[in-house]
Image (cartoon, rainbow, N blue to C red; front, side, top):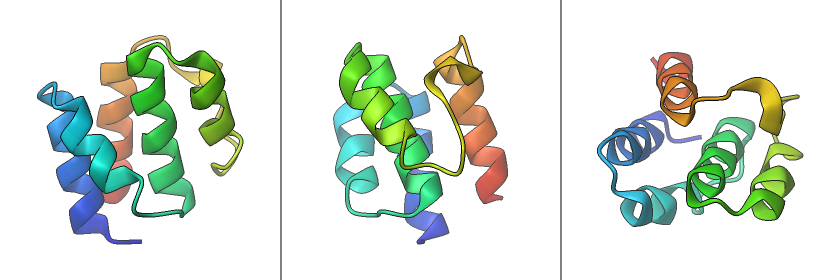
Length: 80
């Protein structure tokens, strides 16, 4: 895991740069990167793809957070 890169990706997502964040997230395959990847597809409205990535996290599910911003902040905290 590259914490610095993933923090950058989270910050990009929080600023609304979905594409920039996605380009970083898809380069990593650990549980945290997969969680971020899942949230990005949730933001995009791609439920199937989001659930696919949640299945590759450390037990996170699509339903864990109703607000993607709150979820992104939680990912950010987990990386700090």
